[in-house]
Image 1: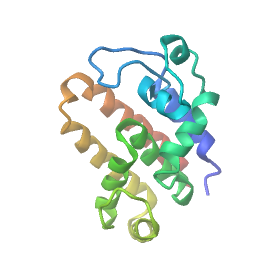
Image 2 (image 1 turned 180 degrees about the vertical axis):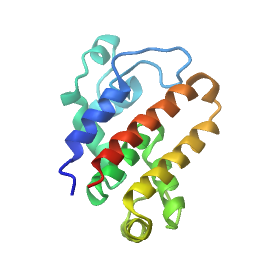
Image 3 (image 1 turned 60 degrees about the vertical axis):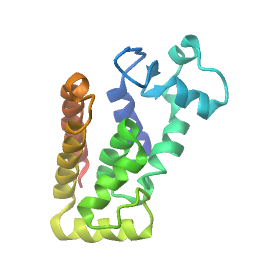
Length: 175
């Protein structure tokens, strides 16, 4: 066990997401700490003005990240180093996409849900090839996922650099 947990993963992901941006090329629109205005409105049930969005803090978005991303990918049931990589992908591309990629690697039924069958397949696969190799393969599949996106010409360089950084942190957590 590496001693890391959700809070450590949240710190890494929030750092990757950065502060407030409103890039017209980004279909997510106004975003702060990786949370779009639409996501914040759905989570909070309140309007997400620019002032509200600029006022988001890691403490405010942490419960959203846990419920809508970490828990949806089964973060507590995964080895934390792998959980970081899957969690980061879920934040960036959606939990179902992240789980489908992982399921495809480990040979679980590809349904986008992280249940017992997927957890067993992950354990079996990781015990056979090693956690570091699984993280490496997941990161490679994540890069392939991004290369297929229509937004890749605009955001691809940043996406790939992010995968590299997340993979590096995840591998440093392999204990």
